[in-house]
Length: 491
Image (tube, rainbow, N blue to C red; front, top):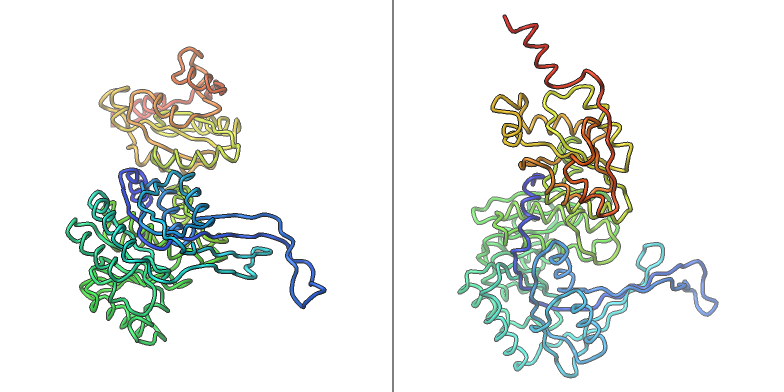
């Protein structure tokens, strides 16, 4: 399974990723209400509308997932010259998404799906859409944009909903342009003819789509493997990722090996948009240099998160980290990098949780340390513990310290119930870490004077406070070392 540190590294580098999404944009409208009575006019339920919600749908949901994890996104598509097209453009502009690659087709109907929900259950869907192929003139404009934009991107994601934007001619040009530029193309396919995607790097069909395209009825594991292998070979793909809903996904590679990935969903509420999430995370992973299997593991993890939501939704870095943590031992999930910690604490601040911070070497953990940390934790809602790295301790205390390495110290401290997160720092002081954490409460030992505490001015400038906690008398790492030397020195 993808490890905590690998996910942290992945998330930390996503600002460098430029992705191009090509495909069918649409509006997803959600009408939420209560259904508590039957209409006197007909035997149907009456929905009392409570709220309305407009979201980017189709290829737009792929875009939302990429933006949520920090990627820079470009778009190539076509919209109608109608109110829904205008609304969709405005939604994208408010999200900071460039629309220079989105062209307007006169007389075309912009796709809009309206879903009516009550008690988190979808009762009805109403579609307004065009399915006819875009004009040759519009196709030429899109090709011109692709020639300009593809070479500057790390990955191209194709989101096909069979609404007419992805014509065979446009797809052929896209594959040719991407191949010349050395940019991978990942496709979420539709329809029964996958030949139009020839030249792509990877396809992500679901079971139904794979069955229709391969003409192999999928009834069990053996037939699923035959269908997946046939599609990968016939289309000369680097890989094929076959999504299997609640059963997870299967990855087919060039050497005719396959790997089954079980779903990691906690609970399934709505599978709509899960394919978009898989496409986005596969693309982001491969753009960051992950092998296909690693990227598929990441996408499987993200899909497990998104099916637990109602409606098309994006997956945030915090949700990914939470999903990884649920699969890690209790102590390991508390040990985080500075980058991961920033994602975590942003969510905690939104919940108005009070963050407490303290730091130290914690070499040879003793009862004085434990009581100190317990008192610190009671000052807020969660305790972030900064721990000096081995190199930092050597600079502060000399070449014979620490006695316990940084990894062991971090794991021992993470095992304490009073500690919520442990983060190592390599600097001589924790000032940079304190600035990243932005705690409401900064804690230090009672042997310090307030003016001596590093970070006090920064914390107080943001409305926080300093708390000095007295250590247990007679308990110290130095004292333990001296006692050991006295008792065992001659031996």
